[in-house]
Image (cartoon, rainbow, N blue to C red; front, top):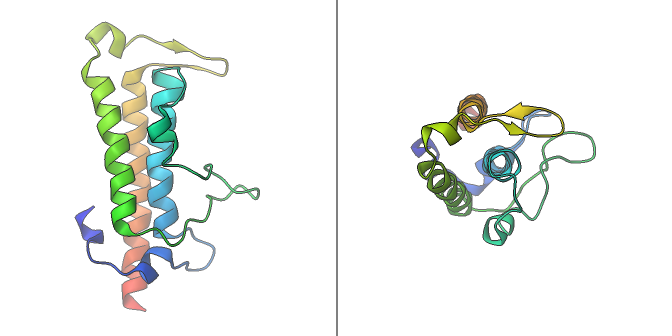
Length: 140
């Protein structure tokens, strides 16, 4: 997300209307990627190093994303990169059979293949929101 390089802390933490902040969305993207990796693909406890990157859960009591404020862009990029590094490390060890092997969970069955597709859609959606918000904040 090189478009974010050099933006101010104020822009990272600013809200327009009832929208989430850029900080909140960056945190959310990383958290959801880690969650799908550990909960659905690996079906295991989270690595403590990754878990420590997320002191807050995903959502506030009202259902909105937890409000993240005061974290620098470097902290967000570190979290995003660390989660992606662990994610890719686990996926690189999968063969074709494991890639398509359903994880049978209580609420649904899911394959690692589908998880990657879903996470691409998820990140794309939030990137669009981030860039739309960034454009508005820069024009104010």
